[in-house]
Structures are given as structure tokens and as C-alpha cells.
Image (cartoon, rainbow, N blue to C red; front, side, top):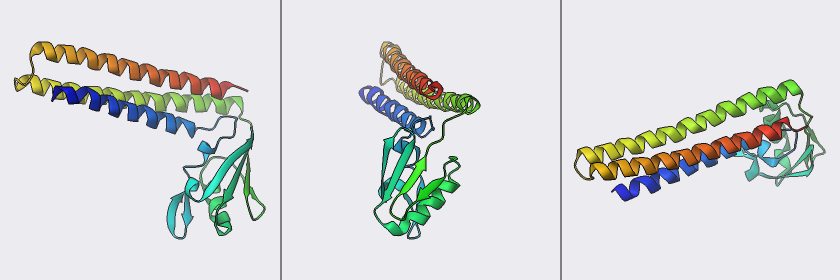
Amino acid sequence: MIGDILPNTEEKMQAATNALKRELSTIRTGRATPALIEHLKIDYGGVLTPLKHIASISAPEANLLIIQPWDPGSIQSIEKAILKSNLGLAPGSDGKLIRLKIPPLSEERRLELTKVVRRRVEEGKIAIRNLRRNAADELKQLEKNKEISQDEHKRTLNQLQKLTGSFTFSANEVSKDKEAELMEV
């Protein structure tokens, strides 16, 4: 019973941290990376499909993305989705592949994106703290039902706090790395 709470909470905290990393990878820096667009939903045959499932995406240069759809008939749908995506990118197509030139970021835009990163990291840390609270509530219930002793409860709460601290620290490190990447010219 008590042995399941910490591993389950750690697994959920790891998932929350991984989700944060994935989300931050979609924030545009000055560099081209497939993560910027691979999550876009494309209307492919009437079904919304992630771009990475219908095309290969590569970054041959630091400021260029190339999208090569497996079905050349989907090029117009991909271009339409990119234009609707609010990423500020203009697709150029030659009928077989799409080129996306990544413009350099202005200083003002870099600062705005830094604020977005901080807000998303704070949301991730809130998710981690909510997981800690849920686990603490489970422990309190076990103690109340006399399934664990008060000592076990306190010992496990301390372990839970250390676990939460390590994942919060990890989220802060991810934030620092992303902010440094954004401010890099």
C-alpha cells in the first residue's frame, strides 16, 4: 500500500516533467528544429493528423526546415495548417517539398517568449506540487485508517518532499536552459 504511493507519484512527476520539456520544445528559438511544427494537426483525408505522421521533417540549416510529405497531394493541407498555426512562418513549396525559412527573433520577441517559458514552467511545477498533495492526502488517509504508523507517515512525507524538490529543481533547470537558448543571438 505505502510502497506503491512513492513510485506511482515519482512516475507521474516524471511524466509531468517530460510533458513540460515537450511543451517547451515547441517554443521557437532562433534555430530551426522539427519540434516547432511536428505537433501541427493537418487535415489529411478529412482526419486531423499530426504532421510528423504524414511527412518527414528535417533541419538541414540552422534557419531552415524542410517538410517532405509522403503523399505529395497533402502539400496544400500542410501549407494551410502552417499558415493557420500562428507561428509566423511562411511556407514555400516546389510541389514535392515545403521549405520554411525561420526568421531571426527580435529582442522584444525573445523577452516575450522568456515570459511564456516561465509561465509554462510554473504551470509544470504546480502540477508537480499537486501530485505531492495527492500523495500526501493518500498517506494521511492510510494513517487515519491505522494502516500505517505516525512514524511511517512522517518518514514517507519526508521522502515525498525530497522527490518533489528534485523534480522542481529539474523543472527550474529546464527553464534556465530554454531561457538561455532563447536569449542566444
